[in-house]
Length: 272
Image (cartoon, rainbow, N blue to C red; front, side, top):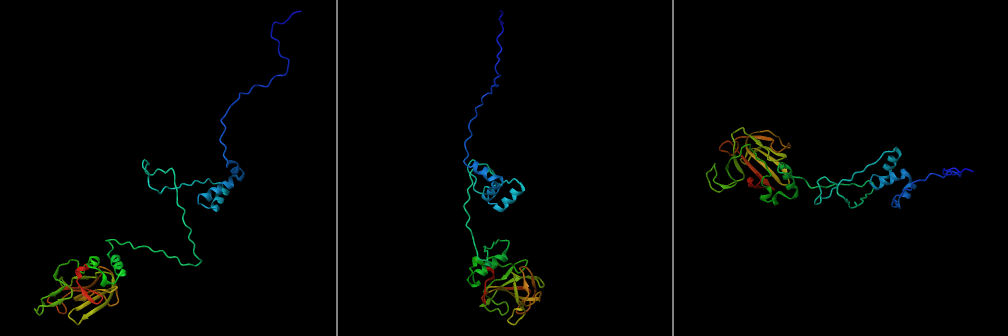
């Protein structure tokens, strides 16, 4: 009997191929994952929209249309040390805003402080007059609120007591300032207002224009050669109201300019 020197081939059934064992790190369990999976993508989008402040209705529309929503929250707080300008802060916190309710049909008004600049003298004058009577306004507050009644200002006679240029007597009270002006020079409104008088003045002012600026403040322009406005007319600062002359109690062409506060004349230089 001969024996085969070769190794005996197994006659049993073939064994299954070995599978290499792969070990992976276990992912940390997300306690909200199963809850989100049960809600589905539609509910996830609407919840996200509501939490983002967009609104649940908008979230439903987004979910229904299949749109992907991205929300960027701007950083309005101060830039921290070491943070580049424009770089988003790592933590953003916003204080909750109070809810404001009103009855149906309620009237809601918004008030704000007026913005006044040196380039807007009419607004400054209006604010000054609306806050108090003209008589209570100090010289420091009124200075510069009225515009020049002539394009070029040169004073030849100041406000107050003086020697009368007509009679030569002392003790004459000058009610305004006399300004150099050739006859026919344009006379300008010192501020916005309403013309209350444009006629002949029987007390020596000759042709006279009076402009009322409100709250007890008026300006007057005297010895005019002619008028450019009528009574009741509304004028703006710088409008030509008349032309200078030498009518009335006058010794030559000039403009007599007055400022009247609550019926009493005051030094015009305190307002110019």
